[in-house]
Length: 183
Image (tube, rainbow, N blue to C red; front, side, top):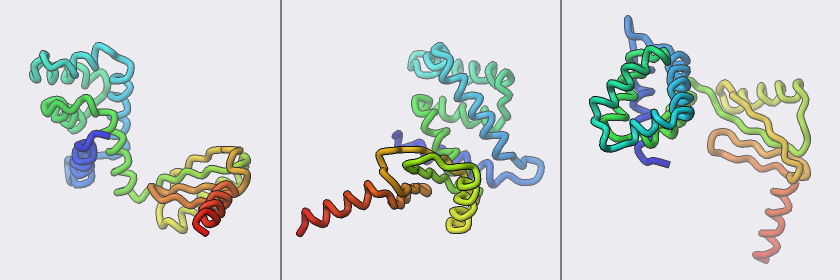
């Protein structure tokens, strides 16, 4: 990952969360604008080529961005942020910056990203009950993603942010192996 991605993401998050009065910004609207740009970035080889080509002047890159902004529905804030990335030759990491921005905004808005992996599929009622329990434990809203992995044998693997809780049979067998190897 590009080391600068977090710095730029936090800077944009600061602008979005510290806006006041007439300049109040909607985080979800900014997120949608960034997603729109990211889709155009992924789909257009020509767009990536223009922004990543060092022989293209910074002013031309900003002009391209200015023509693209109305088509993608970019606000002045989003356009300016992308112009800063371009002017500082950081567009090669734009995807990482946008991912970090989403992560940062979720944290600031009190939304915990949760990945729940089980050996068997969970029903809707089980999923809802887990989301409620995890939300209460985490003290945050939960954005949960559910996965299946039959190799777990049983139990569940829970990831909240960067913390992993391994309650799987496979994990317990691995712990037992490690204890036996040390003995």
